[in-house]
Structures are given as structure tokens and as C-alpha cells.
Length: 143
Image (cartoon, rainbow, N blue to C red):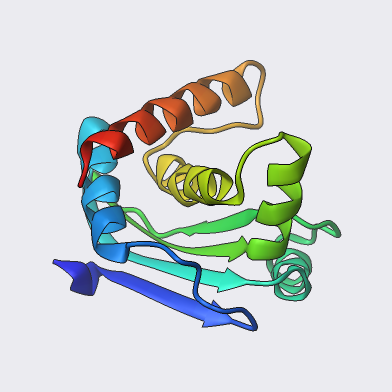
């Protein structure tokens, strides 16, 4: 089952996460949105890499915590997710969350995008945050 998941680091150390637990969590979250998991790649990187990706592929000139490339077909979610650990740390400080919780929120944020949940339009950010919180609660049940 875990061959569907890749965990890659570019310019950073691998975060201290239990990838087998994350796999079970991500699959449960996808299932709760009537989706099945296809290939997912997480690329953990630094701010230099995230802004390079943001400029090259999205023509955005700013730092962000995650960029999700969506290859989903039908119910089968698939994608590449670049996560800047630098921005995750900065955001955690800004919202007074722990780094670990903020990292988990960002990891599931990408999956929720692949499940079709957006966060740019009117009222969508609140919907996304609700699903992130629900997903984080679900993680507590997974050992």
C-alpha cells in the first residue's frame, strides 16, 4: 500500500513524522470524501525551492507553505505536493501553533485540495479550515 506514497526531501532533513501512520490517516481522510488514494508524492523543501516552484509553474512571486500539483482522475486522487518546512515553521509561530501540528495541517491541506476542496473563493477558507480541523481530530484515532 505504501508504494503509492513517496516522501522526498530537497535541501532539508526529513521531518520527524511517522509515515506509516500518515498513510493510514491520508487514506481515511480521502475515503471520508469518497475518494481513493493513487500516487501521492510529498516533497519537503525550503523557502528557496518553494519560491522557485511558485515562480516557474504558477508565476507567483511569494513564499507559501504548500504547492499542490493535481493529477486526480475521477475519484482517484493523485498529486505532487511541495511543502516548505521554513514557511511551515514561520506560519506555526504566527498562529501560535506547534510546528508539528502546523506540518500535519499542511500535509492534509494538500490532500483536501486533491479531494476537491478549495480555499480561494468567498467563504472557502473557512470550509477548508473546518475540514483540516476534522482531519486532525481523525488523526488522534489512528495509532
